[in-house]
Length: 486
Image (cartoon, rainbow, N blue to C red; front, side, top):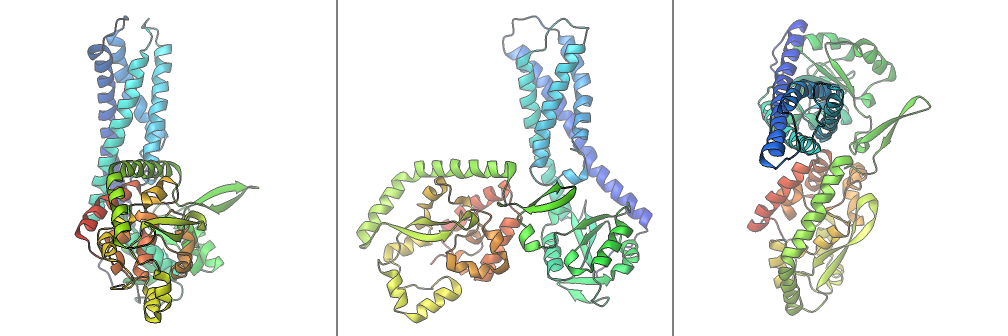
């Protein structure tokens, strides 16, 4: 049994409230500082550093500081920018900052219109600078504060204890995902299951009891989150859980999708005929995440093609001189939505590589089982060098510009390789394949198919634009060392 501090329900609630307070209170203070500095900086830039010939009232703008700070904090609160459910995860928080800051600007304009104590119009330049300064400073500050919270959560602070109700296959996957993402702030203390015996172990977690004994588990282990797996429970048991715990203020009850393999891609809930219906996203990355990823892909690929064009031309000449055959090899792979396309690579094999494979059954068997061939005799002398440093994949920058690939994503695969992804194949088809990814920095061709599938699914489930940037930097370091390439 895991060693867990036992607390009385009142103590648990007090600890939860204090945890929320110490996470949110500094954020309110930081926002107030950023807004104040933005108001002052906008005044200095507009009226002191930049020539301004129209008459203005310094006292009026001083009043705007006194009015603006509490006004903006109130608007932020209305936009739920201090609610724990909307903080420390995803880009929606930053989008909320932009919207709330814009509304704060409108509120200041309305105040200036109603203020009878001044005869001067509010400066449009000052308003523009205020909006720009406030959005930038608040987003940057919140980004840094979020990283601090993540680090503290990894140390065991600002976390909420949870039990997973249902230890079937989906329950195990959900628990594993929560445990592998400490920055989510959820500590899974064990399972509740209607069929397994008390004290049995499931994937390193203990079965703490049955659904009917959940009350004692909540009190004994200080549980604050109940994650329910509907596929592991009977309908009556599920309804009883929500009847007993749906309005209980001690805990927050959450419902897993029931089809984890599909719902990983994200869902939308919409009422149709007053019935809430769930629809799957056709693509995993949506909204502002999709915009940022598109900017990164096209911007990075365009810069890459421009800077590397001499190297691309030089490699093309070397391929032509090294052996007969085309310079570019077109590999038919599966892309977003299952659409097939030709991925470009510098040719690294002999021209009749496919025929050679058919003539050697042992090599073909190794290829079909592992997706790679150690010491492949079909690879040319130049090809081994190009593969070692991934130079053969540089033409895929043009696939990125064509919108078929991303700089970062799951590894591109052929239609025949889809079978290795089993029930996860739907997830794979909701994102574009990448020139690099977790597989590139985790072993490259040394990885088994099972490891590749696991890494691809981890990337899809945990995508952020910051993960893409991190992987791009790490890819460069791995490629320079030339490890895991055949």
